[in-house]
Length: 163
Image (cartoon, rainbow, N blue to C red):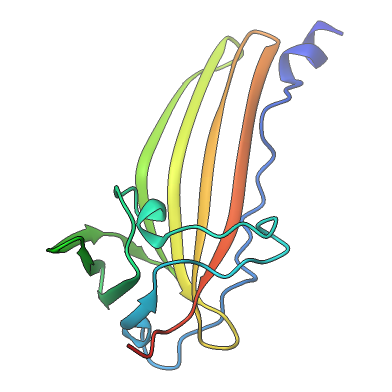
């Protein structure tokens, strides 16, 4: 019985939800362009809209973002107040998306202790050619048989801007 308690956890059971993404016709640079700063509300994200800057762990808001993706780099250019801002982030290309980690800490002492903190986004496109950013956060841990944790993986869809 003790063995069952040690391995039992209310921590996370992860399934990577990549069905939102479709393959690129040529390369991820297809996603380069201007996008509205606020996401579309969907059932999967509980009809919640978010500003794109928050998904990239940036402060403030922007009405329109110029996104440039090439190889393993994402460049965001946007106007915030009277200031032009530019941020370059590095990621890693996968089959149908680019993945950027903001935090990835994992400490594991088998059977005794674990602590996991992950914060990442995946950037790709949907069937309609919209920008999809899948936001993933996990915080969990355990000491012996006492465990707690949560994870969230939500898609946010951004439309191309005609500005």
